[in-house]
Length: 219
Image (cartoon, rainbow, N blue to C red; front, top):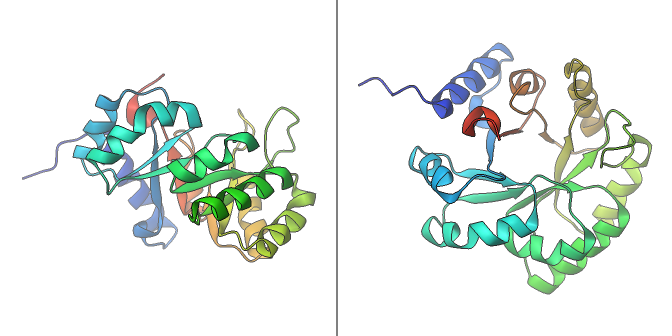
């Protein structure tokens, strides 16, 4: 019987097509369903359809919403994809299975202490301010080698790099630059691509794409 057409099935098909064009295995791309501001009922529907990785932007919202969901669905993984305040580092380490927003030495120190206290080693992505935008979070490109060296000294599990390209212009050059920075610095994960540009990201090597509105509808 043919699978019913849903936003999730459509996104999966588009990931697979983009991966084929790039001669990649689609299984190498993790779809993170960004569920910020969405109710548990909408998340439950996607879990029932087979989605197993979700992303939230704020620690407080996730604390309010996810404990019951995690108890009901222990197989589901939760990623923090928004900026993180240092004073929320321990809360984040306790709740999330991956953090995409390491961007400064003070947060690195807080996360290292939190992981030591909790005994959890949560994989991290270093967020790079790939467009050098003053209003955006992220580590400056020039500061990336030092931050990665500090993370290695602290024995933090850095999985890769993350970026949010500037809005309104072609994302491909920024995705390509993030891939080069990852290769130059010896990390392999690439968290890049959202609802409007994830296919481009997949073709340029994304290992994690963060899709919200294309799955859940406009906020």
